[in-house]
Length: 468
Image (tube, rainbow, N blue to C red; front, side):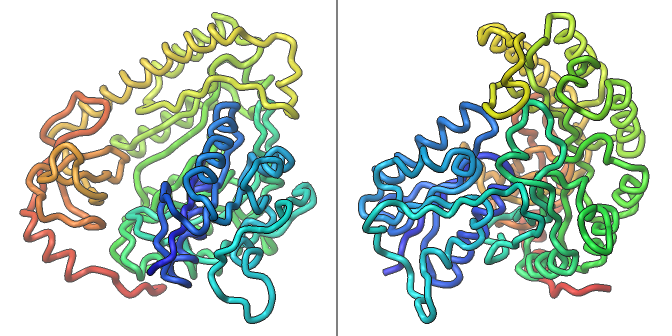
């Protein structure tokens, strides 16, 4: 009987990439059955998040639930919340291993120590939890995970960078992830080629601050240089960038994306606030006009691109005028969707000590207003896509109608395909949008029949990756 492993992930794409790598290691090495919410597991790994107070609460709940639902399992708590407060997790009943970010890549080794001990870890730690949580402030090297984050995902994440040097006044991440550290290009290209060879139709480059990629390497390089390297890898795949700061979307980078036939027209560009004074207090290195110019440049080069933005609501000192400036700026820009975050005090950050904190009720009301603006922006963007033809990666079946397939377009639109009953997960299908107006998904029809698309998928599946 296969051993069962639960890997539960909270938070960002980097956490997801790391969790998928751990899941792949246990699946490939021992043939384990791995899932997010398994019960009766022999091993549970909970990858926690500390970006907000709510995320920390959910992280603690996830650990307690894993202990409760998996009696006798070896339970590992890891991630940002653990890095910030290891003692809190060490005091939880049933937790066996406390692993910080510096040792996350060593979890298989920590659970199976010693020469020749290659067996799957089945026993709980008999005494107090074992704690592996070192200070990250002096760490400079990048530690790859023990396996590629391939799994069964149609869009695996490839982690290229970790940590952050920005120290925005509201953000706990530099304290839980450490300073910016880049992965060596050769290592990235090797894993990228492996993912392509498995037939991954899309690969997402992820990191905490990918715009800083390469600045710490010797010889120094940058994200543009890395994109040039991986864009040479042959195969039937596309490439997607995760979040990138407005000051780091250079003309050179936009040129590379425009010239590539593989890099998706999708840009997630954090804003946080549209008020110049609030941006200064946040320690953000740009103003509203700078942000506006970047987005207008994107829209000019990529008319149908999805452009997402993060906005932080209720930062200390944000009065009604500052909020309204943010609202009006976003409303005027070609933003197509919003991630709205209510401000949450993070102990240990400068903003947590600011005296002009806002009442929670005010933050909730403003967040609700901003979320509605985000929904309206998405509806407008979706409505512009009617009758356009898009490249869509099939991600599975539509849960409401199993005859329909669901997928994601290259410009980041969820699509439901009505004439694709035979389409399989991982296929890339050319689709024409037939219905718009929703802010959840668009309906489409495959330009060719599902049978023809399936034949083409069989012919091009799992291409051999190589550098041209």
